[in-house]
Image (cartoon, rainbow, N blue to C red; front, top):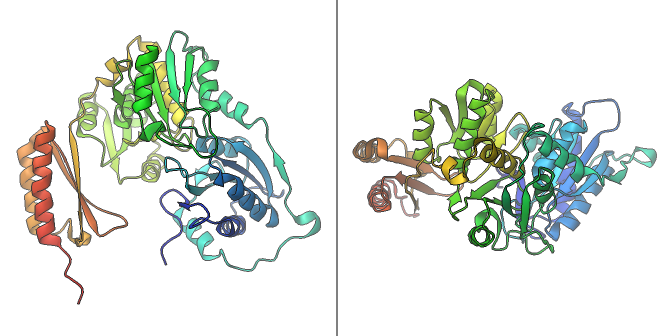
Length: 455
């Protein structure tokens, strides 16, 4: 049986793979496992905060999660619709024992997910997730009478989270004079994102900020940026911000309508934090998929890049292990550990805008710190991915192509984590050159690593 927890909680089509029954069992098992592991921090009855994004399915899944936690003797505070990083922040701020967020992030509306946060607003370790999964169907001794958990609501959750976001900029970081279009993806930040920028004096033009339960991420947000690009040009805005459904990632658009991706945002913030002497060890954490242009720019600026496997959880692990203060992914997950325990799209956007004001430069000028090299990815299916790094012919071909590309290109072979395929990624000075090299290497991988047909 496949592991229920993925790289970011439990996710699937709501009411098909992710049912109310699973949500109930998950939350009940989480309460018991965390309690037994000593994760609940006081003698009082444990407290859980529960938030969700705007998906219609979040309504019934939230009810199931709340029921499971309360039936296990946990007091539950419902936060309502709020970004994922808002739940993480409030768990730490309010000394709660557990946080639960119902969201499938940038996935389409029929999907949903359940993310857990332990004390301090941090994601659960793999061993805790495994323990929860193993004990989901266990018959528990349930509390009765006064022992059952109580359920309340927190109408001030959004205001508290917005206050935290604004406070992260300091006392003299007005955004007055900036005109900003914010694509809220009809998601969890449709209130918090405009409110945060408005509080700092920016002229805010909300876009896709009218959720109806069905339109989250629907041709909008960080995965569909054409309407944001058009809106920035239409309104003559200085900056466009694209969030995803749960607002844990951020991409941007400059005043000319050009997209500014996560690598560029990370580069801009790395330079800003080094100037403020808050970039620990002059190091930024990124994944192996970061564009070579980002790596070159950081090297030229004297900033070290600590590369991890793909996934924001691996970025966060490296940051926590070494005390690094900035990390992120090309997709727009940016973690600023001084202010957040997870990626926070609105926080990222605020600090990006503040950098524009502080330097007096346009986003286009700031993003010019790096030149994105064309990147081509080819998936080669039906191969023995375990041999991708050890086959001598494949390795020789990779080395030869990498040597030919030199500093102005890069080759990366990456086995898929879930499928029998190998991803061939090539960066070069031109898209044509990258495509040519990628196709040639994909052919070698296909020839050398093809699986034997079943007999």
